[in-house]
Length: 106
Image (cartoon, rainbow, N blue to C red; front, side, top):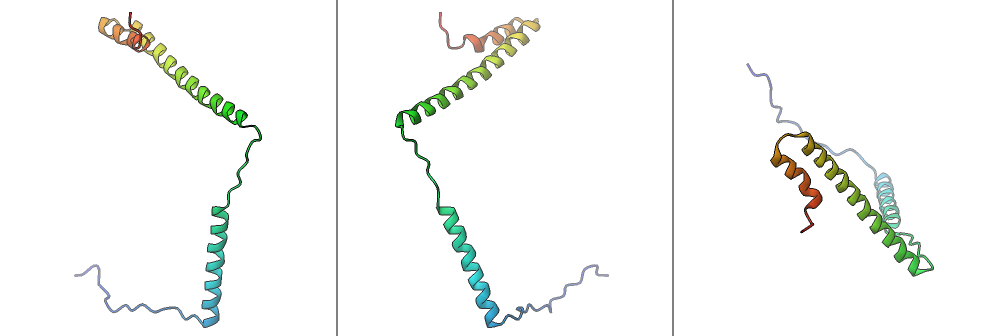
């Protein structure tokens, strides 16, 4: 008993398309590709009049990013110190204070 029977006599046929339809489809494809190319390659550049203002804006952005990363690291260090003080294991207390004093040498 076969559950699945192979039908090997299938033939594929192209859909009938007249010359006018083919030409219209080609025109449509070319128009879509041209529009996509024109919209994809055109870019408006807004330039500032003062180059110092651009440098200052970039500097403020970079320092703000560094400040945000520093605040995240500070919060992580405070959590680690709090967890180490909660623990009764002396080695874990030393590990909790390590992130805060890692870069400092006395």
